[in-house]
Image 1 (cartoon, helix red, strand yellow):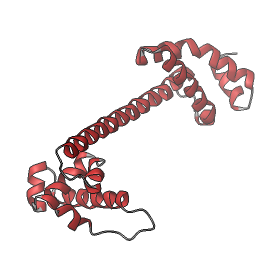
Image 2: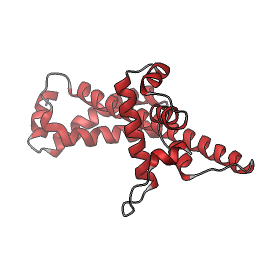
Image 3: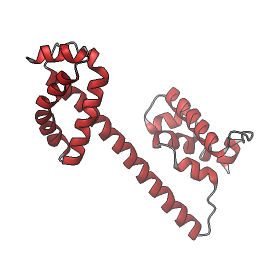
Length: 186
């Protein structure tokens, strides 16, 4: 059977046809993933995940391209998603390390470190900076917009979103919300 016949059979539930499609495409897919990852174990994991997604979405394969091309597109998306996740995790870990170091230095210098600083330390920079400029230093939204080079409306929404996030972190669900603006000015 050729590839199109194998795909048709696999869509109808023929496990043997699906296995043959995978067997034929595996070396090609694995070599591609090795070039992306430079890690055999990760490439094999991504290949397995690619096949899992292919099985889930086989009915969506229209046959406009080769089956191997479709697998490559799935594998590429999985790889890019993995890289984005790793980048987010690395950024988070780096930020956590910085917050812990700052807390340690502050406490060793007999300075106050409160829960608000802890909560602010967990915010992304684009939320934390406008909050600090607004609530610690009293800059207007217009001034902050000029400093961070974003529209004033964006600054307002970032301050609002950031304060909402900090409040959520500081106040367990069953407690009443505190006056965060007052706390931030202290």
